Length: 154
Image 1 (spheres, helix red, strand yellow):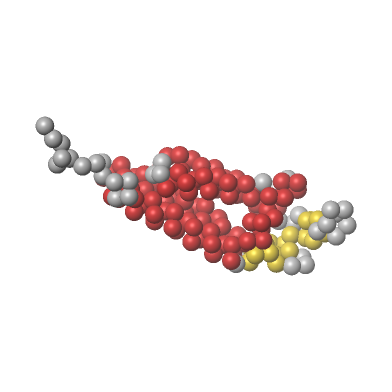
Image 2 (cartoon, rainbow, N blue to C red):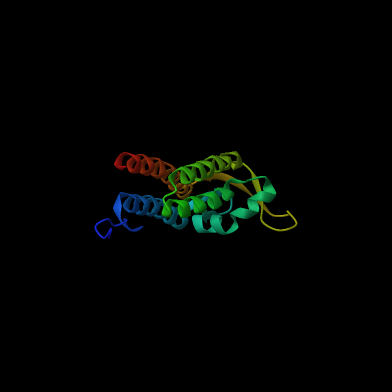
């Protein structure tokens, strides 16, 4: 007896696939915009998002941990690809919470050399920072909506 009439749906088909692509695409688009636009206004210069991405890990030495939200965001993107919506929601929510540590950084003196002789004052965040936050929030909201949509379809 053959079961040829029953076919298992492909991984790349259905509402889950489109939801996954939409969530990842929206979050990545916002992240790319964040990297291309000014993100931090310092006393002596303005850093674009890609510069903050490149050097942000060093904030650890100043007690600033918001950059590490990027790691959780990236893992969330991977999980969104595999449609693990609850885990995506947890990791991306954690990324958003960690990113809020950035607000404690305003007004901090940042060393420009190893000897801490030259410093600059961090004045405020610019548009790129808010696009970065939006990319994290898009993954949270997208994962929640995708989870709801895929639950209703079952």
